[in-house]
Length: 280
Image 1 (cartoon, one colour):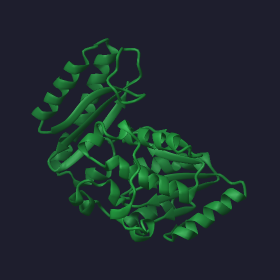
Image 2: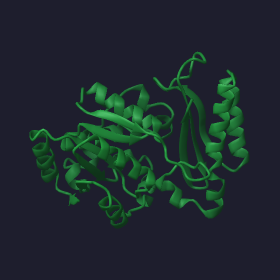
Image 3: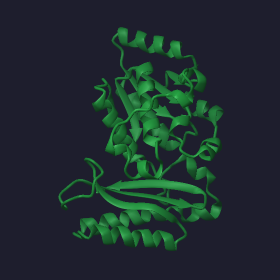
Image 4: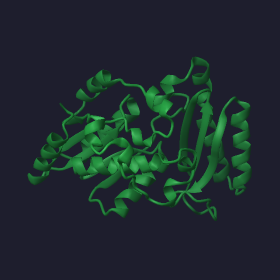
């Protein structure tokens, strides 16, 4: 596995592969890799001749500067984990080289309503930062496939909107969320939970499963399910940002029971903000 930081080097290498008719699968990450990330890499291995993984903590998607400062750096262990897989290149760009115009002068992408609801409302500018970094990464790596996890369901939809809006020639592949034994979605943020917080964090998934069972049982009272679940989480010590039932097409409130739906939860536990979802 090559570890490349140079912008021109990664562009040249990926272009050479494409010129030779060889396919590329890409997994963009911010590091602090866990089994969920590695499952995306393994999927990428099955899709293409070459696998590129990036580790880049993108400052443009952090609306809270403290959150950016606290984001864990585990590059050495990340390299060891990726080296055990069939990864051709780990791309680790420098922030100054990636945003040569200066982070404060980057023109952020506007993808419309999908970026302003739910996570977009709670974290203004977050998805503009996500879209901007993903587009630049796609332009450098030029992948045929890009693999993202479904834990960040709205982010996956934003990336698909990005591809559609800019007619990018890349297939977006979504992969199911990997979970701990108690159902907690694997996340780099879990490392920052105290032992007491970690012991109750699985309640988010437990409540997602309960709402799904109610919907599958014919319960159409979406507002009551959302409110009661929010109350359950608050009673357990969480501070819910939202508990919503939405359609999977546009993340809007479903109009009937026959729509494909997703239940999304965001809640703080102590200082850590956790998100999760489950499809119905």
